[in-house]
Amino acid sequence: MMWKRWKKKFIGDREFYGRVLYLAVPMIIQNAITSFVSFLDNIMVGQIGTEQMSGVAIVNQLLFVFNICVFGGVSGAGIFGTQFFGKGDFEGQKYTFRFKMYASLLIGFLALGLFGAFRTELISLYLNDTGSVGDIALALEYGKEYMLIMMASLIPFAVNQAYVNTIRETGQTFVPMLASVIAVLTNLALDYLLIFGIGIFPQMGVAGAAVATVIARLAECLIVLVWTHTHKEKNQFIKGAYKSLLIPKKICRDILRKGTPLMLNEMLWASGMAVIVQCYAVRGLEVVAAQNISSTITNLFNIVYLQLGSCIAIVVGQLLGAGKIEEAKEADTKMIFFSVGCCAVVAAVMAVIGRFFPSIYNTEESIKELARNFITISALVMPLCSFSHCTYFTLRSGGKTGVTFLFDSVYTWVLVIPLAYILANYTALAVTTVFFIVQFTEIIKVTMGFFMVRSGVWVQNIVEKS
Image (tube, rainbow, N blue to C red; front, side):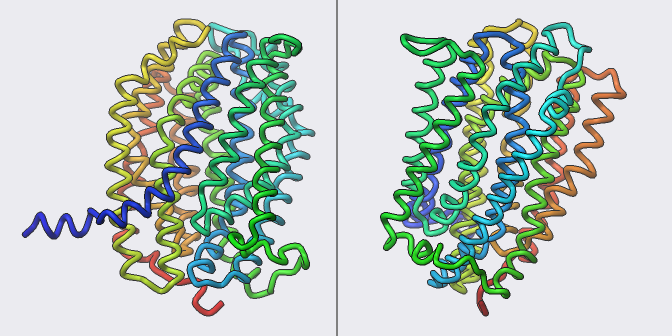
């Protein structure tokens, strides 16, 4: 009897998992290919030297903050867009799409100005000469060269995210996946040709890696835009999307009220992650290089729980928008259980085989060993990250962006960053120990998330009267 109740609560039927996997598998494949190509890209840059790898890694950390800010800018409106679609209100979804375009372009142009004016200062934050390997002046020059070219990809990325985020709200994940696959394969091929100078192509090193990425981003954006505008029946939101620039005052006000905390949360969380990496970086260039290796590999394994968490926002958000409250609660419980279960398996695989990956890199043995330790710790904490990630998207699906702000950004800046700063700068603890302690603060977040989801505070239809 107890088994039947437990099974009913936590395990869905074949139709339920079919729907979840229909959404998740294309997103997982898309991100798996992206992460795998990033991994190969990372190895290719790593073949030319520790300084080149470190300079590129630092810039990519800064670009990660930009990427997440764009994600936050479109996600605030995306909460409404998902529920509008679940309600069958395509006009409302069109207005949320316009909002996303404004937000993503604004963030894109602000980033261009910031990276253009303070390129040297931002990269220098991560360079410290306390370590025993590497030339920090050389790493800075490679980083500046890479960033200057990568700036050309910011606007195409921003526009693409506004489109992809809206397409995914409708449950269509295949075309964004296909565009991403084409882009990353293009990126990989051009990386090989331009970094090493194969055949008629010049040997460009770090600059070649940047040029390859810019071309790939442009290709991805173009594919998504062309498909969206040539398949208007599947993408009702695009009909008349550019006939006017207006957004109804009420919808705009609601998105700003709910979306601003989310956008600020994404921005502060991403910048918080960058600050934590900077805290580790005070221990030397070898830590920057090791973190780059471990994070590249960890991202390859993290995609399962990251995309299953994103599916919660789509499935639960649509059910809430349709007024199916109890069904939304049941689906959320089953999806969290499924995500954590899958993640436990993935983490076990990562712990076993992840330690072999650093050996592929052409860098110092001390960096490889440090990267192995980081990978093992990341594998151990992964199931906890899965649960807290699902909790975040559960709260977000119901529009509880103020709560997610406290849960994510305030938690990071008030607890995690001060702890990382103090341990890295004012203790003699090994950097591996510091990394372990900081990573396992996730236990606190999991505890908070469990009680917030259990309370049902997130269960609400935010487009019922729109």
